Image (cartoon, rainbow, N blue to C red; front, side, top):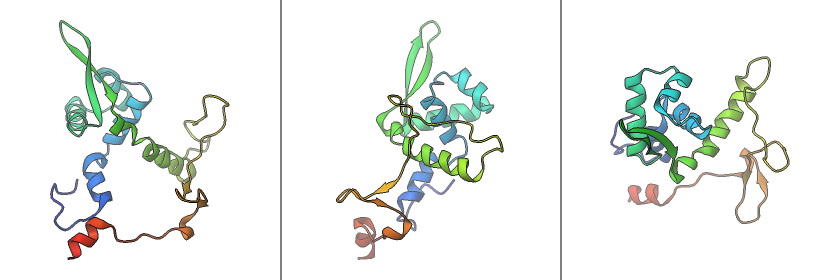
Length: 154
């Protein structure tokens, strides 16, 4: 993981990696999104050591990506649910999934399909302009300095 200070990194990607860049973190978020919400079920699904899963879940709770919700008393047991902040990672997961389907999928094809519930159509992600709604590709965009970078340069 990167350091916890950002003196040399004025970059949203590096700050995002501090939260979700560890190898198990997005897999945990994926599983919670798929409906695997209890510790034991997550551990079985992922094959991760208990201490690692505990650490990552605590970090996700601390960062506001998941919330612990009790589902049993005596003893108290918890399950995990995505917060709105966690749900905002869905496009990231889908983008990674699509990349993996294209460049790292097994010969049999992609492991999962993403379909629209109402009509069964395949779900696409694309770049689009918020002003004119035109679909874009990498040749249609430019990356410019934002307010944080401009302020740091002063």
